[in-house]
Length: 79
Image (cartoon, rainbow, N blue to C red):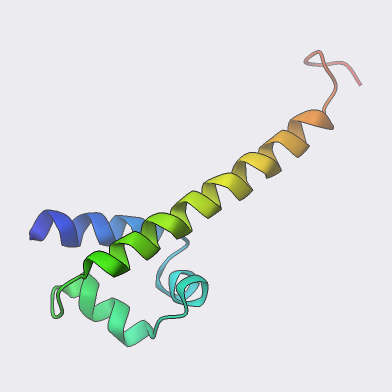
């Protein structure tokens, strides 16, 4: 159970911390703190929603990285 809680807390941080996580998943911050602190059990549904949010963030981050790379000179040091 501790591994699940620790991993959930790690995922919350990957999504930008508690406030950003709550905005993205539309969840009350107090509830998330209770999940992270082990005061409430983390449901499979919450983990699925967290996984979906992480996947969406990864897609957005990859698109942003591709845009950056597309706008850089092809050779390092060339302007």
